[in-house]
Image (cartoon, rainbow, N blue to C red):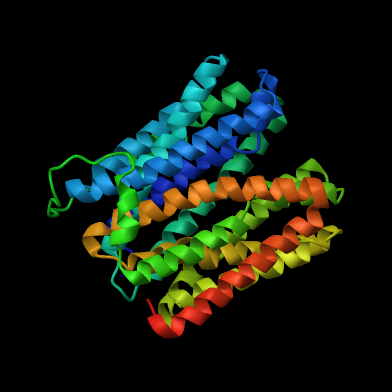
Length: 391
């Protein structure tokens, strides 16, 4: 794997351990918050506020990384902030403290995302971008497999001991922070010394290349269809499956994602990044049509298998595709701007999905998302002839 450089390998190991720490807590976070007195409404407000901060900060810190010509300090600071925030969440139960520490975790993600993805892009040749981003996503998602498994193992022996689990999550986080210390900063030109405002990245959309805007528009419309994975798990629960099966099927999805991210990323380099993203979107639409009528565990397993393939075909590849449509000196801004808008659009998507589910039922929510995704596929295919084949 000559295309996997030392920097790519380090960043992938860092993401593996960070995601292990995060996903160790993901299944028990709402349970813990309810245990310390948070209502469902307050949990929603907390998560929505934290994700909004993360989303907006991705664009700002991506722009700041490009402007300063530096990547590594943003990567190190972002991962360090996320690592220390997890045990802090378990120290006190006051609402303001919980809001602050949860926001710090998401802010850490915002600080590092644009700079990290720009580093990955810098390390990849034009012919290897899918492979590099796919390898990183595979390692990152393997953490999402190992984390919940470790949590289930611990809670099997120490039921409801959630606070200790938050403290345990510190250790993989510290390994990730230690690994970021092995990164070396390459010399890059400084783009300017004028200050960067929090919303200055918004101007990038107007200044960006037409191809970038074409990709951005399509991916953001898809983000409106792509509501939280929680709805898929709720559908599995609604079908009468046990809590253990629901957690297990979530781990199964992440395992499929991790296994196929690298080979599909490599395939994308050969057939074209856009073709792979379109294929992934078609898989997403298929999954949502199927799950709208799914009842038994066998069909649900098929759905989550295909959903893992969709994620492997699109998550890393879409960023690789975006990175080909911008100036190399603006990669962090380009990806940071996309992920900022994506985070905010995801909030709208989940709210809209919840409204449709509540008023019309789960079936129509999933059908709506599938139809909107097919519209995005038509958009990409109809504009592709004008843009040409894009790697």
